Length: 345
Ligand SMILES: Nc1ncnc2c1ncn2[C@@H]1O[C@H](COP(=O)(O)OP(=O)(O)O)[C@@H](O)[C@H]1O
Ligand SMILES: [Mg+2]
Image (cartoon, rainbow, N blue to C red; front, side):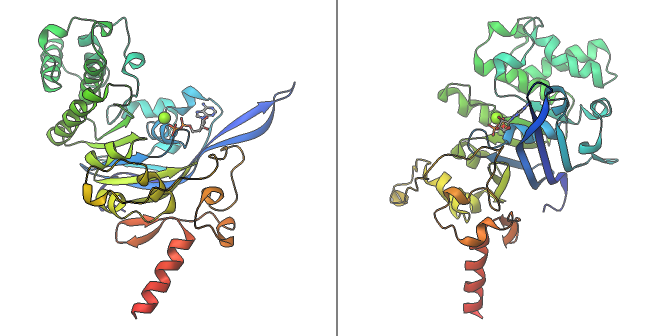
């Protein structure tokens, strides 16, 4: 999709087996991610959005290959191809041990800055740790660089010897950002990095991340359930529903001209500051999200879709180009577009 991708995710599947009964027989599968494809370009920020439980965190964890730590018997399919400077590596085929070698290239910032920082380490130890593990910098150089990094995320040298509990949520997330940046990675996966913060702090942290993205020349996968956050920060947006991508394209296209009925519904719930657009129709979806253990056949959104037709239960729709770089997985949108283009000809 992108000409110079940092990572190309192809048909990613993450299935968690469920066991039951006295002999712990496999009784089902949670299809948390069920055939997801997208790419992230160099220096690009891709926003990944969708309701809670649709598989966003699982995509992020698969992309740094830490799922085996969470669920040892997880089944992972597809490809996660990283294009590093000197080699192409498929993370989906690496053992957790082999992945360690590339840990400095791909970093993750977690949703909860309270839980993700080691409470027994000082801020300088936390930020220094990846430098110790992944670089051959001398101790004085590491120390100086840590102070430098703290300055870049808006903290001061006096903060270096304090512990995480002495900080506010926003400051802790700044520490997490400094640690993620320490090894100058190619990609940082940010899993809802501001949703645990006060609204007044969210914008500060997002603006900081946007500035640092430019300064460090890094790509971001920015996971959020709030579309308005993603629109502001992202170059491209991927919309996810029940383990599948429904739409992927340039941010302003997806935000202002969504094609998929699910993206339209998700967007219609976002408050609009522009008074000229106040009349935008609000689409309320009927019913609940089905469980990923027992997904509908065909399109996973069809049980709640306002434009569903019989063909939607047949095959899982593939992402297909709507415009160059704008991809939509919906047989009805595809059919409507074909009719339109025939009329023009
Ligand atoms: N370790 C696990 N074992 C079994 N099911 C899991 C595990 N992790 C996540 N899931 C399930 O996978 C689905 C997607 O979860 P998640 O990726 O956390 O979604 P999101 O981040 O979009 O809220 C959910 O149904 C969740 O219950
Ligand atoms: Mg999540």
